[in-house]
Image 1 (cartoon, one colour):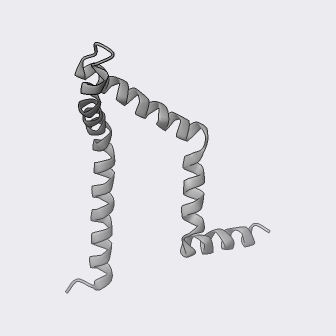
Image 2 (cartoon, rainbow, N blue to C red):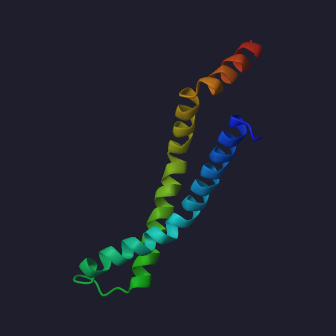
Length: 100
């Protein structure tokens, strides 16, 4: 019989795998969706094709990701996730104590 901990572990791994796959796929899909929604409004002012608007959206997403790395927002988020995880803080505190 499979233990409760094993089932929980399998569910967590499944969720993590699903979310990582979703994250990789959402960028091009969001670019397409954004272009599709904005195209009728932008076409009133600029003669632009769907694929051009999709490319612009993709470039904007990549630029925002670059700013995220450059401003070290990713680092701050990771630090926060460690600070809010009691198990990880225990590891951090033990590491600090052993380095004294």
